[in-house]
Image (cartoon, rainbow, N blue to C red):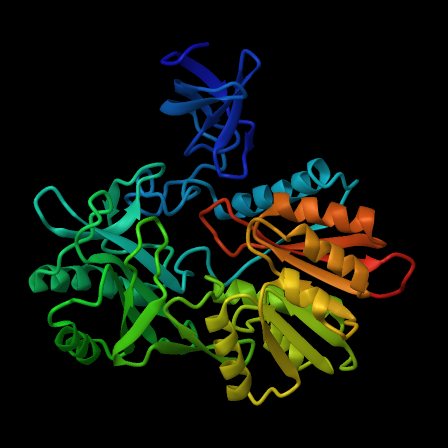
Length: 454
Protein backbone atom coordinates (compact mmCIF):
# COMPACT_ATOMS: atom_id res chain seq x y z
CA UNK A 1 0.00 0.00 0.00
CA UNK A 2 1.29 3.44 -0.89
CA UNK A 3 0.11 7.03 -0.73
CA UNK A 4 -2.54 7.77 -3.34
CA UNK A 5 -3.83 4.20 -3.55
CA UNK A 6 -7.57 3.66 -3.88
CA UNK A 7 -8.69 0.81 -1.61
CA UNK A 8 -11.83 -0.77 -0.17
CA UNK A 9 -12.18 -1.25 3.60
CA UNK A 10 -14.79 -1.80 6.29
CA UNK A 11 -14.82 0.34 9.43
CA UNK A 12 -14.69 -1.90 12.52
CA UNK A 13 -14.00 0.58 15.33
CA UNK A 14 -13.79 4.28 16.26
CA UNK A 15 -10.69 5.72 17.94
CA UNK A 16 -10.58 8.24 20.80
CA UNK A 17 -10.37 11.18 18.39
CA UNK A 18 -13.53 10.06 16.60
CA UNK A 19 -12.00 8.63 13.41
CA UNK A 20 -13.11 5.32 11.94
CA UNK A 21 -10.67 2.42 12.11
CA UNK A 22 -10.24 -0.21 9.43
CA UNK A 23 -7.55 -2.53 8.07
CA UNK A 24 -6.13 -3.20 4.63
CA UNK A 25 -3.56 -5.93 4.09
CA UNK A 26 -2.89 -5.90 7.84
CA UNK A 27 -2.30 -2.13 7.96
CA UNK A 28 -4.45 0.00 10.28
CA UNK A 29 -6.18 2.90 8.53
CA UNK A 30 -7.91 5.87 10.18
CA UNK A 31 -10.71 7.49 8.18
CA UNK A 32 -12.57 10.60 9.43
CA UNK A 33 -16.35 11.00 9.02
CA UNK A 34 -17.04 7.28 9.18
CA UNK A 35 -18.88 4.90 11.53
CA UNK A 36 -18.61 1.24 12.46
CA UNK A 37 -20.22 -0.84 9.70
CA UNK A 38 -19.40 1.50 6.80
CA UNK A 39 -17.95 -0.23 3.72
CA UNK A 40 -15.96 2.37 1.81
CA UNK A 41 -13.76 3.21 -1.10
CA UNK A 42 -10.92 5.20 0.46
CA UNK A 43 -7.98 7.19 -0.90
CA UNK A 44 -4.76 6.74 1.12
CA UNK A 45 -3.58 10.31 1.75
CA UNK A 46 -0.85 9.76 4.35
CA UNK A 47 1.35 6.87 5.49
CA UNK A 48 2.95 6.55 8.92
CA UNK A 49 4.88 3.73 10.57
CA UNK A 50 1.98 2.61 12.75
CA UNK A 51 -0.99 3.48 10.55
CA UNK A 52 -2.31 5.20 7.44
CA UNK A 53 -4.78 8.06 6.99
CA UNK A 54 -7.55 7.70 4.45
CA UNK A 55 -10.22 9.92 2.92
CA UNK A 56 -13.65 8.73 1.84
CA UNK A 57 -14.07 8.59 -1.93
CA UNK A 58 -17.33 6.65 -1.96
CA UNK A 59 -19.63 5.01 0.58
CA UNK A 60 -20.20 1.58 -0.94
CA UNK A 61 -22.50 0.38 1.84
CA UNK A 62 -23.50 2.70 4.69
CA UNK A 63 -23.53 1.54 8.29
CA UNK A 64 -26.98 1.04 9.86
CA UNK A 65 -25.83 3.62 12.43
CA UNK A 66 -25.13 6.33 9.81
CA UNK A 67 -27.59 9.24 9.63
CA UNK A 68 -27.83 12.49 7.72
CA UNK A 69 -25.95 15.24 9.62
CA UNK A 70 -28.21 17.92 11.09
CA UNK A 71 -25.80 20.69 10.12
CA UNK A 72 -25.18 21.75 6.52
CA UNK A 73 -21.44 22.25 7.14
CA UNK A 74 -20.88 19.18 9.34
CA UNK A 75 -18.45 17.71 6.80
CA UNK A 76 -16.38 20.92 6.79
CA UNK A 77 -16.58 22.41 10.29
CA UNK A 78 -14.21 21.13 12.96
CA UNK A 79 -16.68 21.66 15.79
CA UNK A 80 -18.22 18.17 15.61
CA UNK A 81 -16.88 14.79 14.54
CA UNK A 82 -19.96 12.59 14.87
CA UNK A 83 -22.99 14.38 13.43
CA UNK A 84 -23.29 11.50 10.95
CA UNK A 85 -23.70 8.89 13.74
CA UNK A 86 -27.04 8.18 15.43
CA UNK A 87 -27.14 9.49 18.99
CA UNK A 88 -27.77 6.20 20.81
CA UNK A 89 -24.88 4.52 19.02
CA UNK A 90 -22.58 7.44 19.90
CA UNK A 91 -23.23 6.68 23.55
CA UNK A 92 -22.65 2.94 23.07
CA UNK A 93 -19.29 3.68 21.48
CA UNK A 94 -18.29 6.04 24.29
CA UNK A 95 -19.10 3.45 26.94
CA UNK A 96 -17.05 0.88 25.02
CA UNK A 97 -14.11 3.27 24.63
CA UNK A 98 -13.97 3.92 28.38
CA UNK A 99 -14.15 0.16 29.01
CA UNK A 100 -11.32 -0.43 26.56
CA UNK A 101 -9.13 2.29 28.09
CA UNK A 102 -9.56 0.83 31.57
CA UNK A 103 -8.67 -2.65 30.30
CA UNK A 104 -5.83 -1.78 27.94
CA UNK A 105 -4.24 1.20 29.70
CA UNK A 106 -5.25 0.54 33.31
CA UNK A 107 -5.13 -3.28 33.07
CA UNK A 108 -8.42 -3.66 34.96
CA UNK A 109 -10.30 -6.93 34.47
CA UNK A 110 -13.98 -6.53 33.57
CA UNK A 111 -14.39 -3.03 35.07
CA UNK A 112 -17.97 -1.93 35.72
CA UNK A 113 -18.76 0.91 33.30
CA UNK A 114 -22.28 2.32 33.14
CA UNK A 115 -23.89 3.71 29.96
CA UNK A 116 -23.53 7.48 29.56
CA UNK A 117 -25.77 9.80 31.55
CA UNK A 118 -27.30 12.36 29.20
CA UNK A 119 -28.59 15.90 29.27
CA UNK A 120 -31.93 17.02 27.90
CA UNK A 121 -30.95 16.88 24.23
CA UNK A 122 -28.02 15.86 22.01
CA UNK A 123 -28.48 19.17 20.18
CA UNK A 124 -28.66 22.78 21.37
CA UNK A 125 -26.80 21.97 24.60
CA UNK A 126 -23.68 24.16 24.53
CA UNK A 127 -23.94 27.05 26.97
CA UNK A 128 -20.83 28.78 25.62
CA UNK A 129 -19.39 29.33 22.15
CA UNK A 130 -16.15 31.08 21.24
CA UNK A 131 -15.61 31.76 17.55
CA UNK A 132 -12.41 32.88 15.82
CA UNK A 133 -12.97 35.82 13.49
CA UNK A 134 -11.72 36.33 9.96
CA UNK A 135 -12.38 37.88 6.57
CA UNK A 136 -13.81 36.16 3.50
CA UNK A 137 -12.15 36.50 0.10
CA UNK A 138 -14.51 39.41 -0.58
CA UNK A 139 -13.70 41.18 2.68
CA UNK A 140 -16.77 40.18 4.70
CA UNK A 141 -16.35 39.54 8.44
CA UNK A 142 -16.67 35.85 9.25
CA UNK A 143 -17.03 33.87 12.47
CA UNK A 144 -17.09 30.12 12.82
CA UNK A 145 -14.90 27.12 13.53
CA UNK A 146 -11.76 26.03 11.78
CA UNK A 147 -11.94 23.22 9.25
CA UNK A 148 -10.57 20.09 10.89
CA UNK A 149 -6.77 20.03 10.89
CA UNK A 150 -6.42 23.53 9.41
CA UNK A 151 -6.77 27.24 10.07
CA UNK A 152 -9.30 27.66 7.29
CA UNK A 153 -12.37 29.30 8.84
CA UNK A 154 -15.80 27.81 8.12
CA UNK A 155 -18.25 30.70 8.40
CA UNK A 156 -21.37 30.05 10.50
CA UNK A 157 -24.60 31.97 11.07
CA UNK A 158 -26.04 29.34 13.40
CA UNK A 159 -24.90 26.14 15.07
CA UNK A 160 -27.19 23.22 15.96
CA UNK A 161 -25.23 22.16 19.07
CA UNK A 162 -25.12 25.57 20.76
CA UNK A 163 -28.00 26.95 22.83
CA UNK A 164 -30.51 28.37 20.29
CA UNK A 165 -30.54 31.66 22.23
CA UNK A 166 -27.03 32.36 20.87
CA UNK A 167 -27.88 31.97 17.19
CA UNK A 168 -29.41 35.45 16.68
CA UNK A 169 -26.19 37.05 17.90
CA UNK A 170 -23.86 35.27 15.50
CA UNK A 171 -24.99 36.75 12.16
CA UNK A 172 -25.89 40.20 13.50
CA UNK A 173 -22.71 40.86 15.51
CA UNK A 174 -20.62 40.16 12.42
CA UNK A 175 -22.55 42.85 10.53
CA UNK A 176 -21.96 45.34 13.35
CA UNK A 177 -18.22 44.59 13.39
CA UNK A 178 -18.18 45.12 9.63
CA UNK A 179 -20.04 48.42 9.92
CA UNK A 180 -17.68 49.67 12.64
CA UNK A 181 -14.67 48.94 10.46
CA UNK A 182 -12.83 47.17 13.24
CA UNK A 183 -9.84 45.27 11.97
CA UNK A 184 -9.53 41.48 12.28
CA UNK A 185 -6.44 39.89 13.76
CA UNK A 186 -3.92 38.24 11.44
CA UNK A 187 -1.97 35.65 13.41
CA UNK A 188 0.89 35.43 10.90
CA UNK A 189 1.63 39.16 10.97
CA UNK A 190 0.39 39.64 14.56
CA UNK A 191 -1.62 42.62 13.37
CA UNK A 192 -5.27 43.66 13.52
CA UNK A 193 -7.56 43.89 16.49
CA UNK A 194 -10.44 41.44 16.90
CA UNK A 195 -9.47 37.83 17.47
CA UNK A 196 -12.58 36.04 18.79
CA UNK A 197 -16.25 36.51 19.57
CA UNK A 198 -17.41 34.69 22.71
CA UNK A 199 -21.01 34.14 23.82
CA UNK A 200 -22.13 32.59 27.10
CA UNK A 201 -25.72 31.86 28.17
CA UNK A 202 -27.32 30.78 31.44
CA UNK A 203 -29.42 27.74 30.58
CA UNK A 204 -31.72 28.34 33.54
CA UNK A 205 -31.64 32.15 33.61
CA UNK A 206 -31.36 32.84 29.81
CA UNK A 207 -28.89 35.66 30.59
CA UNK A 208 -26.27 36.22 27.86
CA UNK A 209 -22.76 37.68 28.09
CA UNK A 210 -21.04 38.89 24.93
CA UNK A 211 -17.25 39.18 24.88
CA UNK A 212 -14.88 40.44 22.22
CA UNK A 213 -11.28 39.23 22.46
CA UNK A 214 -8.90 41.76 20.94
CA UNK A 215 -5.19 42.37 20.56
CA UNK A 216 -5.52 45.59 22.56
CA UNK A 217 -8.10 47.80 24.25
CA UNK A 218 -8.21 50.18 21.30
CA UNK A 219 -11.60 49.66 19.67
CA UNK A 220 -13.05 53.04 18.62
CA UNK A 221 -16.75 53.28 19.42
CA UNK A 222 -16.90 50.09 21.51
CA UNK A 223 -18.81 51.77 24.36
CA UNK A 224 -21.48 53.12 22.00
CA UNK A 225 -21.78 49.78 20.20
CA UNK A 226 -22.02 47.89 23.50
CA UNK A 227 -24.90 50.10 24.64
CA UNK A 228 -26.67 49.49 21.32
CA UNK A 229 -26.33 45.73 21.83
CA UNK A 230 -27.77 45.93 25.34
CA UNK A 231 -30.78 47.84 24.01
CA UNK A 232 -31.24 45.44 21.08
CA UNK A 233 -31.07 42.14 22.99
CA UNK A 234 -33.28 41.97 26.10
CA UNK A 235 -31.46 38.92 27.49
CA UNK A 236 -27.98 40.44 27.05
CA UNK A 237 -26.78 41.49 30.51
CA UNK A 238 -23.22 42.53 29.71
CA UNK A 239 -20.60 43.26 27.06
CA UNK A 240 -16.96 42.72 27.98
CA UNK A 241 -13.65 43.24 26.20
CA UNK A 242 -10.80 40.84 26.80
CA UNK A 243 -7.28 41.94 25.88
CA UNK A 244 -4.94 39.28 24.54
CA UNK A 245 -1.74 40.81 23.12
CA UNK A 246 0.20 37.53 22.97
CA UNK A 247 1.04 35.37 19.99
CA UNK A 248 -0.19 31.80 20.00
CA UNK A 249 -3.49 29.96 20.17
CA UNK A 250 -4.56 30.87 23.72
CA UNK A 251 -8.00 32.45 23.36
CA UNK A 252 -8.32 34.66 26.43
CA UNK A 253 -5.78 37.13 27.77
CA UNK A 254 -5.43 38.04 31.42
CA UNK A 255 -7.36 41.34 31.32
CA UNK A 256 -11.13 41.66 30.90
CA UNK A 257 -13.22 44.78 31.47
CA UNK A 258 -16.95 45.38 31.40
CA UNK A 259 -17.77 47.80 28.58
CA UNK A 260 -21.50 47.92 29.33
CA UNK A 261 -23.64 46.09 31.85
CA UNK A 262 -22.20 43.29 34.00
CA UNK A 263 -19.03 41.27 33.54
CA UNK A 264 -20.84 38.03 34.38
CA UNK A 265 -24.06 36.10 33.96
CA UNK A 266 -25.86 34.21 36.69
CA UNK A 267 -26.68 30.52 36.28
CA UNK A 268 -28.64 28.08 38.41
CA UNK A 269 -26.87 24.75 38.91
CA UNK A 270 -28.05 22.05 41.31
CA UNK A 271 -30.39 24.60 42.87
CA UNK A 272 -27.55 27.05 43.60
CA UNK A 273 -26.74 30.42 42.01
CA UNK A 274 -23.39 30.90 40.27
CA UNK A 275 -21.69 33.90 38.70
CA UNK A 276 -19.93 33.07 35.44
CA UNK A 277 -17.51 35.50 33.77
CA UNK A 278 -16.37 35.31 30.17
CA UNK A 279 -13.29 33.21 30.94
CA UNK A 280 -14.74 31.20 33.84
CA UNK A 281 -14.49 27.45 33.37
CA UNK A 282 -17.93 25.88 33.66
CA UNK A 283 -19.11 22.60 32.19
CA UNK A 284 -20.36 23.22 28.66
CA UNK A 285 -23.42 20.98 29.10
CA UNK A 286 -25.28 22.20 32.19
CA UNK A 287 -27.94 19.48 32.29
CA UNK A 288 -25.53 16.56 31.78
CA UNK A 289 -23.22 17.99 34.48
CA UNK A 290 -26.17 18.17 36.89
CA UNK A 291 -27.06 14.58 36.08
CA UNK A 292 -23.51 13.44 36.79
CA UNK A 293 -23.48 15.35 40.08
CA UNK A 294 -26.72 13.61 41.10
CA UNK A 295 -25.09 10.25 40.29
CA UNK A 296 -22.06 11.16 42.43
CA UNK A 297 -24.26 12.22 45.35
CA UNK A 298 -26.30 9.05 45.04
CA UNK A 299 -23.19 6.86 45.02
CA UNK A 300 -21.49 8.63 47.92
CA UNK A 301 -24.57 8.63 50.14
CA UNK A 302 -23.15 11.41 52.32
CA UNK A 303 -24.32 11.55 55.92
CA UNK A 304 -23.40 15.15 56.81
CA UNK A 305 -20.48 14.16 59.04
CA UNK A 306 -17.78 13.95 56.37
CA UNK A 307 -14.83 16.16 55.51
CA UNK A 308 -14.50 16.49 51.73
CA UNK A 309 -11.70 17.88 49.56
CA UNK A 310 -12.43 18.98 45.99
CA UNK A 311 -9.13 19.16 44.12
CA UNK A 312 -9.13 21.28 40.91
CA UNK A 313 -12.40 22.82 42.16
CA UNK A 314 -12.65 25.75 39.73
CA UNK A 315 -15.45 28.12 40.76
CA UNK A 316 -16.92 25.54 43.13
CA UNK A 317 -19.28 23.96 40.58
CA UNK A 318 -19.32 20.61 42.40
CA UNK A 319 -17.80 21.83 45.69
CA UNK A 320 -20.78 23.90 46.76
CA UNK A 321 -23.59 21.35 46.28
CA UNK A 322 -21.35 18.73 47.93
CA UNK A 323 -20.62 21.14 50.82
CA UNK A 324 -24.34 21.27 51.62
CA UNK A 325 -24.20 17.54 52.36
CA UNK A 326 -21.00 17.28 54.44
CA UNK A 327 -19.63 18.74 57.64
CA UNK A 328 -16.67 20.51 56.01
CA UNK A 329 -15.56 21.06 52.41
CA UNK A 330 -12.24 22.36 51.07
CA UNK A 331 -11.67 23.44 47.47
CA UNK A 332 -8.21 23.56 45.88
CA UNK A 333 -7.60 25.55 42.70
CA UNK A 334 -4.54 27.07 41.01
CA UNK A 335 -6.38 29.78 39.05
CA UNK A 336 -6.78 32.83 41.36
CA UNK A 337 -9.75 34.30 39.50
CA UNK A 338 -11.63 31.00 39.87
CA UNK A 339 -10.94 31.03 43.62
CA UNK A 340 -12.38 34.56 43.83
CA UNK A 341 -15.52 33.46 41.96
CA UNK A 342 -15.83 30.34 44.13
CA UNK A 343 -15.80 32.47 47.28
CA UNK A 344 -18.39 34.83 45.80
CA UNK A 345 -20.59 31.88 44.83
CA UNK A 346 -20.35 30.43 48.34
CA UNK A 347 -21.37 33.79 49.81
CA UNK A 348 -24.28 34.22 47.38
CA UNK A 349 -25.64 30.84 48.43
CA UNK A 350 -24.99 31.28 52.14
CA UNK A 351 -22.66 28.27 52.31
CA UNK A 352 -20.28 28.80 55.23
CA UNK A 353 -18.71 25.36 55.77
CA UNK A 354 -16.43 25.58 52.72
CA UNK A 355 -12.89 26.94 52.41
CA UNK A 356 -11.22 27.69 49.08
CA UNK A 357 -7.42 27.53 48.98
CA UNK A 358 -5.45 28.99 46.04
CA UNK A 359 -2.38 27.26 44.67
CA UNK A 360 -1.25 24.25 42.67
CA UNK A 361 -2.85 21.03 43.92
CA UNK A 362 0.63 19.45 43.93
CA UNK A 363 1.52 21.90 46.71
CA UNK A 364 -1.74 22.54 48.57
CA UNK A 365 -2.94 18.92 48.91
CA UNK A 366 0.06 17.58 50.87
CA UNK A 367 0.13 20.71 53.06
CA UNK A 368 -3.39 20.19 54.45
CA UNK A 369 -3.64 19.18 58.09
CA UNK A 370 -7.15 17.71 57.92
CA UNK A 371 -7.85 14.05 57.18
CA UNK A 372 -10.61 13.89 54.56
CA UNK A 373 -13.20 11.16 54.29
CA UNK A 374 -13.73 11.87 50.58
CA UNK A 375 -11.51 13.40 47.89
CA UNK A 376 -12.94 14.51 44.57
CA UNK A 377 -10.38 14.83 41.77
CA UNK A 378 -11.26 16.69 38.57
CA UNK A 379 -7.92 17.39 36.85
CA UNK A 380 -7.31 18.70 33.31
CA UNK A 381 -7.09 16.30 30.35
CA UNK A 382 -3.46 15.40 31.11
CA UNK A 383 -4.55 13.84 34.40
CA UNK A 384 -3.00 14.15 37.84
CA UNK A 385 0.62 14.91 38.49
CA UNK A 386 2.32 11.94 40.15
CA UNK A 387 2.93 14.01 43.31
CA UNK A 388 -0.84 14.49 43.66
CA UNK A 389 -1.46 10.76 43.48
CA UNK A 390 1.35 10.07 45.97
CA UNK A 391 -0.12 12.67 48.34
CA UNK A 392 -3.54 11.08 48.04
CA UNK A 393 -2.08 7.64 48.84
CA UNK A 394 -0.35 9.16 51.86
CA UNK A 395 -3.50 10.94 53.08
CA UNK A 396 -5.58 7.76 52.61
CA UNK A 397 -9.14 9.07 52.32
CA UNK A 398 -11.67 6.27 52.54
CA UNK A 399 -13.35 7.28 49.29
CA UNK A 400 -12.08 8.82 46.06
CA UNK A 401 -14.14 10.12 43.15
CA UNK A 402 -12.07 10.82 40.04
CA UNK A 403 -13.85 12.92 37.39
CA UNK A 404 -12.13 12.95 34.01
CA UNK A 405 -12.67 14.04 30.40
CA UNK A 406 -9.84 11.81 29.11
CA UNK A 407 -10.33 8.09 29.68
CA UNK A 408 -6.72 7.13 28.88
CA UNK A 409 -5.19 9.35 31.57
CA UNK A 410 -8.00 8.33 33.93
CA UNK A 411 -7.12 4.66 33.43
CA UNK A 412 -3.41 5.38 33.95
CA UNK A 413 -4.01 7.24 37.23
CA UNK A 414 -6.52 4.71 38.53
CA UNK A 415 -4.05 1.89 37.95
CA UNK A 416 -1.41 3.79 39.93
CA UNK A 417 -3.79 4.41 42.85
CA UNK A 418 -4.87 0.77 42.93
CA UNK A 419 -1.35 -0.64 42.62
CA UNK A 420 0.54 1.77 44.87
CA UNK A 421 -2.27 2.52 47.33
CA UNK A 422 -4.78 0.24 48.96
CA UNK A 423 -7.66 1.20 46.67
CA UNK A 424 -9.98 -0.79 44.47
CA UNK A 425 -12.05 0.46 41.57
CA UNK A 426 -15.74 -0.08 42.17
CA UNK A 427 -17.38 1.41 39.10
CA UNK A 428 -17.25 4.14 36.50
CA UNK A 429 -20.21 6.33 35.60
CA UNK A 430 -19.92 7.88 32.14
CA UNK A 431 -21.68 11.05 31.01
CA UNK A 432 -22.30 12.42 27.53
CA UNK A 433 -21.27 16.03 28.09
CA UNK A 434 -20.38 16.51 24.41
CA UNK A 435 -22.87 14.87 22.01
CA UNK A 436 -21.84 14.91 18.33
CA UNK A 437 -18.17 14.66 19.38
CA UNK A 438 -15.93 11.80 20.51
CA UNK A 439 -15.43 13.28 23.99
CA UNK A 440 -16.81 11.52 27.07
CA UNK A 441 -16.82 12.46 30.76
CA UNK A 442 -16.31 9.88 33.51
CA UNK A 443 -16.64 9.62 37.28
CA UNK A 444 -14.69 6.71 38.75
CA UNK A 445 -15.39 5.57 42.31
CA UNK A 446 -12.60 4.11 44.45
CA UNK A 447 -12.58 2.85 48.02
CA UNK A 448 -9.97 1.55 50.40
CA UNK A 449 -9.75 -2.21 50.21
CA UNK A 450 -11.33 -4.12 53.04
CA UNK A 451 -13.81 -1.40 53.97
CA UNK A 452 -17.58 -1.21 53.65
CA UNK A 453 -17.49 2.36 52.33
CA UNK A 454 -19.31 3.26 49.13
